Amino acid sequence: MKEILPEDKSLALAMRALSHPARLAILRYLSSIQKPCCGDVMSCVDLAQSTVSQHLKVLLEAGLIERKGQGTKNCYSICSTEFEKVRALFDETVSPLTKSHIPENAE
Image (tube, rainbow, N blue to C red; front, side, top):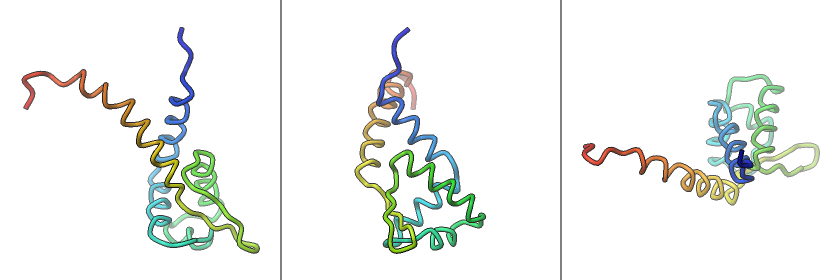
């Protein structure tokens, strides 16, 4: 059996992070505001602070967001470089799959 590629593991981690509606809402919110802190992020979803923190942790572990401390608060921002990597990996992985399964006479 062949070994699982590191890039497949990276893509799977990112896809897992992107697979929850609350995390997508958080990412959308982070992209619309500069330097939001955890309390600010809580305003974009109707969830408990502990739940929002868990979602932020998943996004951080996937490298999709960055955290910077500002005094006693944590501020979050989108990691554009990582999103570009994920997009490229996704395209690289999915493109051959979709091309090989399109019937020649499909409309």
